[in-house]
Amino acid sequence: MIIEQDYDHFIASFKQQFNMDIASYKQDRMRRRIDAFISRKGFENYTNFLNKLRADQNLFLNFIDYITINVSEFFRNKERWQTLESKALPKLLEQNSGKLKVWSAACAAGEEPYTLCYEVTFVNSFSPIIFFLDGIQKLQK
Image (cartoon, rainbow, N blue to C red; front, side, top):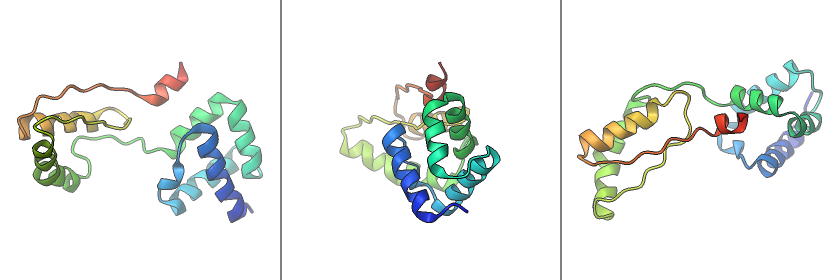
């Protein structure tokens, strides 16, 4: 069985090595996913797994794909979009003289940035310029 201290060390080492902080996710769920992946790939501990991640880009990409959310849909988490529409965007636009820079994190298929574009364009009569970047695809090249 993999012990708790090793998991904490793995999370810290992963952040330092790959500049990705997976500690911000729900840790009980994240740990189950990581442990399942490690077990399925035949590793006995986090240290051996981390060493292999450093050396094997395909394993790294498979791991990232496994632990990240690969669901994308328009207006996903509708209550959050409603809060953005009714409270956050109007206040931000007012505070910034109608100018706003918005960044949308990488997503599975792009629906979230399009939803964001809809919100700021049609609901708030704002003309956005949106740049798309998918970090995972960049890593694969």
